[in-house]
Length: 606
Image 1 (tube, rainbow, N blue to C red):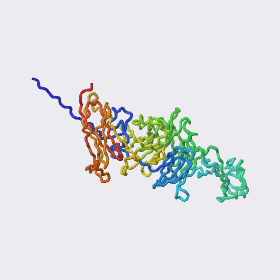
Image 2: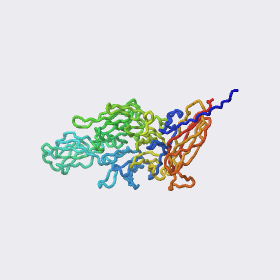
Image 3: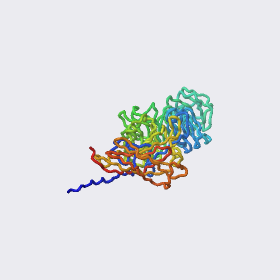
Image 4: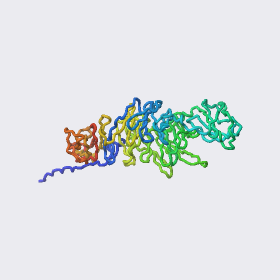
């Protein structure tokens, strides 16, 4: 008689996730790499390469208007806040001083040179500098303090001379120098139809009296004839000649790029809506001097210049694209035979055009900018000056491209990460964590209402549309895991897993997360399959601490090491399976070190 053979039980198998990458919204959830997640929010990889809940933010000040700009001061002490039509200096102790009340109510940008903060709001090009007593900050229009060029030198009293410096777009003031002949009292300057402002003169550096001015002809009469200069210019006449529209060419600019070849010796301004394809270069280390001859037009006005990036010894000028022209232009530096600086342009790489001037940044030597189809990176070599533009955000493009008003997005680089803020969301690119295709790993945050970002005193700050000035907390701060008073809902989800065999049912016998304990922490584990989500376990993971002692959740755990626990919850007959683990409790940190899924195979799917 044939004996009955009992079937052998299926061997228990396990799947372990111990390395964590970023979010992947592009790939189907069943095809996502095991280290990445198709659905994750408010998580980030810490310096030890495991997932942690992001810290929260706190409101530090409330303004009665939207915050359009937030800028570090040149000396690193305090910041400037552009709120509504006002500009404030905020000291480290929180005291605020109003600097001006006629700012443009639109997003502003800045740059710093020689200890002065320069602001561009599309209305007035402004300098924030220390006052004459060098004690307090003041905001002044650059037009009022701009460099006055000497446009003509060594002219005869009847005119002529040698052209020297170009007219400054920011000021109508000019200076001419003359060689006195000992008898002439009338001197012809190099302009007609002079302004009604005072005309002044000096002879050998000392002021002399101007007896008459014919403003229509530009003839200036001195009270006495200067001495003979014997071939040297000894007469200097200062006057003003306004050219309509000159100052607005600079005042209407919205952003800047510093460049000078090997050094950042000059400022290039652009963003003027009246001349979108044009930029203007400053004088050497002088952002108050923009020669009327120092402009460059790139392509056509159908495609606007959106921003600047520096790579190696070149400046990359990125336009909005389209219009069948180049997306970028490459500016280089060379010295002319006469010693003057030249900045020749050539057509750069073709790629997606930029959409926001406030999203240009450099992450670990990789220049980045935002396009309508995600974040683009500019790759190149220093030897051949070749550039390639390609997307570095494929993993988040399906989510990011659906955001409204991407032109209002802003970005900043902080502690090796690129933070892109739009519509209450933050997209974070981690420059130290690289995916298989070479792109940085991306993370997605919610409930961060930032419309401008800044790094101030080593911390990340932001301003909101309702006038709040906020700062992200450091992990060691008290109540660091609250957004003001709101809990932070953070979670990570595995890919949808076939668990080695697409054709068979599986029985999930256990899910074992390995977590980092804190004085107050916990985790919620959910199983997900074709029938939906099911809560498997919600558990505290506390360390004993007198500071957070609560007898309702008392813990004897004292060692701050990794802690592993089992859900002890089975899931039967699942062809596909996923786990979601997170923490949405107020003021609780959360850290995920690893996740183990133990399972056995069952029958073939019918």
